[in-house]
Length: 309
Image 1 (cartoon, helix red, strand yellow):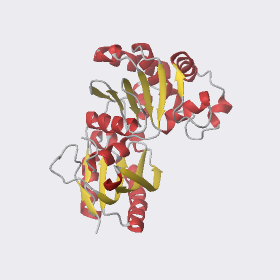
Image 2: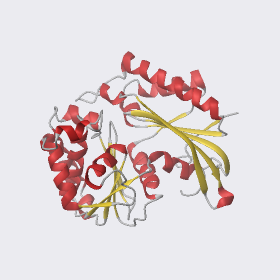
Image 3: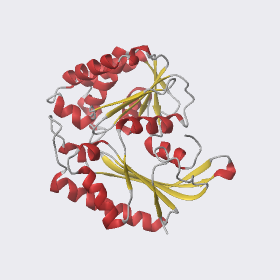
Image 4: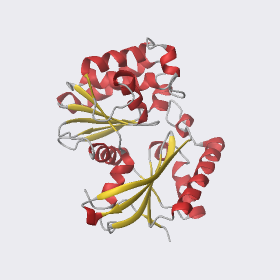
């Protein structure tokens, strides 16, 4: 029988998973992700990915510029269809343990927490609704699990929020600067978005002091990396100057339209990824950019199994 679990990062009294099949679900502003892992601590923390799936929901598009919004019936209908598909996949694998997290859009929407609670009533799913700093820490743990990096900054820009994490000190922060949020807040101007993110990071203060590498999280950031280094981005780096040039081209509309069309669905969103990259590089002295394959779900896995705290 599947056992849904609280998040050990917030509830350390929860017993770690030492072996078996564990499913990690991530309810985000852009999509619902599910990854199925087979873990075996007797093999020094080894795990194998059995399957993974992603269903785009664009739930973050429900956001408004003033931050007061509901998911609404149309978005909820999409979420319910996606949840049903995920339920079928869980049934197929019958994992021993399941841990689910919900992030930005669900904590910010006026009806977001209610939707999460309803999933417990309907399906028996316990969804851990986490705050931005917890999200930042988990994303960083996942990102750094297969990147050898001891100093710098991890950034995770989702659909609704932007998380930043200082690798050396563990300091973190969360801003309402996800792709959908920035589109609304900047009134459709990537240049204005760059200015808004830059001002927020300057006010934070410590980002200007962080030295080392900039580690980016997510498929969209890897897509930008592919434009610079080719299809394979794992373990590859991009210089500060090269990334600043690409970010500037994205925010000013100088990237060839044909190039953007090679990545369906990203044409209107990549300029806001560029805005964040440009702002971070303007504020910080970071010299190299790296692209992580793992993120929040792997961070959850690591904490649930007790491999890291």
